[in-house]
Image 1 (spheres, rainbow, N blue to C red):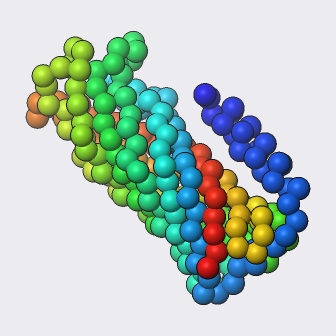
Image 2: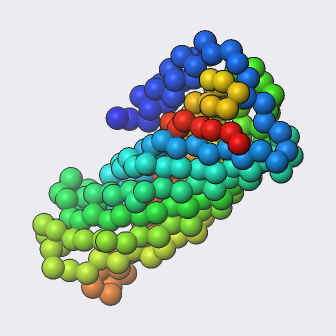
Length: 204
């Protein structure tokens, strides 16, 4: 699925939710928990040697409202598994990663009746593990360093009742990992994904 199709799906989800017309007013001191799934879609030109495939996994985020408009958010996930291919499409390995991301959000209309959009920016830490090789690289040791980078997001909540909501979001995360094969440097693999999320949320 290409990025255009993913964006179209998000827009369709936004449109379908506008039929709901009850409010989930958010204010200072509120907590939100949203749980669902996200698709991590790496950039197409990850490096001169390899490409990293998309991956989808369960995600959960927690938000705390410092004021009526400003919230702190932590994104967590079940590990994402990515296949690693050479430029000709030959699969040479796989890896798993966890991308905890901390963001500060601005909610434009926390007391909106239906459509409650927000933007956010923050810091991402990505750790890679369970990296395996296969095919032409089978038997070699591929290592991917952990990554620190910035992150940005846009999203919206769509209110179902005074406690529950639907949520969609799009994030960009700066992820670049230094790769080594049997100790020899392969350079930096710039994953830099777009992350498309769909969640159900609860306020307490």
